[in-house]
Amino acid sequence: MNCIFCNIANQDNKNKKNWVFETENCCCFPDIDPKAPVHLLLIPKIHITSLQDIKNNNIEFINDMFLSIPKITEKLGLKSYRLISNIGESAGQSVMHLHFHILGGRKFDWPPG
Ligand code: AMP
Ligand code: ZN
Image 1 (cartoon, helix red, strand yellow):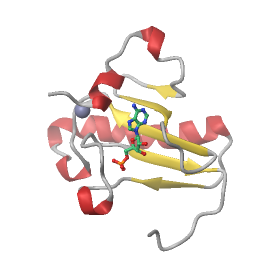
Image 2 (image 1 turned 30 degrees about the horizontal axis):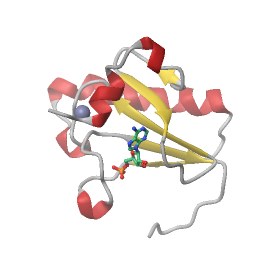
Image 3 (image 1 turned 60 degrees about the horizontal axis):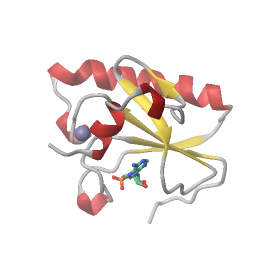
Image 4 (image 1 turned 120 degrees about the vertical axis):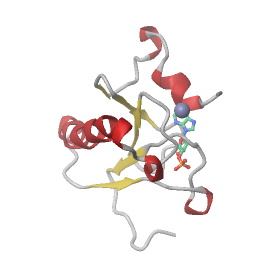
């Protein structure tokens, strides 16, 4: 399978320079097309299509992602931020590998468009 986020998660150390956080199970790096002053993506290191595909055999990856979020935001000094995971095309998911958007550094509208 040719998945851009699988490729990112499995790349050489020399290409990890822009990663802001990493554990055994997940990694976090800047979005290539930022929509806020801070716009990071947090992804599991195995291919999981979306949150719709959580299973007992991948729950440790999800668990680790959630535990990583406050560590990442604390590291960046983000006191308020938005966490988004688009699930499926009509919700706006364009990369079919689970990811959390971590957005901060500006005011956000509600509801989202
Ligand atoms: P979504 O539309 O919710 O699936 O989010 C996918 C996100 O991945 C978009 O915000 C893209 O800008 C971002 N993206 C796509 N390719 C890359 C890449 N190579 N590196 C970093 N971010 C990427
Ligand atoms: Zn993938």
